[in-house]
Image 1 (tube, rainbow over the protein chains, first blue to last red):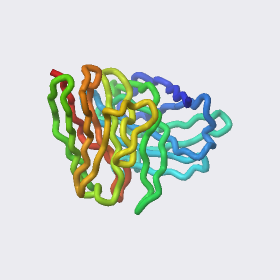
Image 2: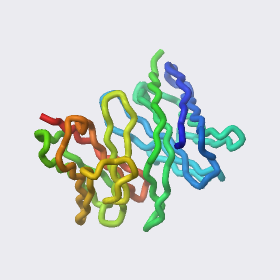
Image 3: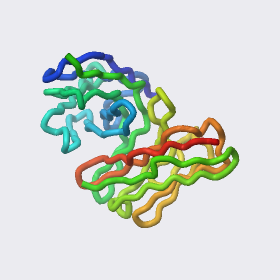
Length: 124
Length: 106
C-alpha cells in the first residue's frame, strides 16, 4: 500500500514561495502513475493544482500555471510543489496524491491515494 | 472552463437511501469520480469511472450516469457515512471538482 508523507512548511510570508515535498513509500514513483497536488482552503472545496509523471511530463491548473512548478526526484522517490508569489488566498490544506491517468477523449485523472494534508498559512 | 454543480446539503435518516447529484456539461464525455471526506481527514475515493467501486468500499455505495448528471447513491445509510462528498471530472483545461455536498445522517 503506497504511503504519501508530506513536509509541513506551516507559515509562509506573502510574496514568498511555498514549497512542499511528498515522499512516496512502499511504492516506486517510476511505476506508471502520475503524482500531484490538490488544495483545500479552510472550510471550502477541493482545487486541483497539477500532476507530474516520473518522466517530467506535467499538467497544471490553468488558473495557477503561471505560479506553479511541480518536480519529481526519482532518486529520492519524492515529488515537490513550488507556488510562487503567494497571497492570503493561497492559505489552504495542501494534499499530495497519486493520480491514475485515464485515456479517453482527453487525458484525465482521478486520485486513489492521498497524503495526510498539510495546512499552509500565508501571513506576515 | 466547465463547472460541476452539487447540492450544498442532503439529509437522510439511517437505513434510508441518499442520492447526491452532480451536473456538468463535460459529464457526457468524461468519467466522474466521487470522494468522501470526514472532518480533519483527507478525501477517500469511493467511486471511479462513473460506477466502479474501489476495493474496500462498501457495496452500499454506487454510482450512475445519465447525460449531464451523475449520481452517487448510498443505500442503507449508516451514521458513519456522514461526511462531505465531492464529485470530480475533467474538462479541456484539466481536472475539476464539484463544490461538495454535506451529507447529514439524521
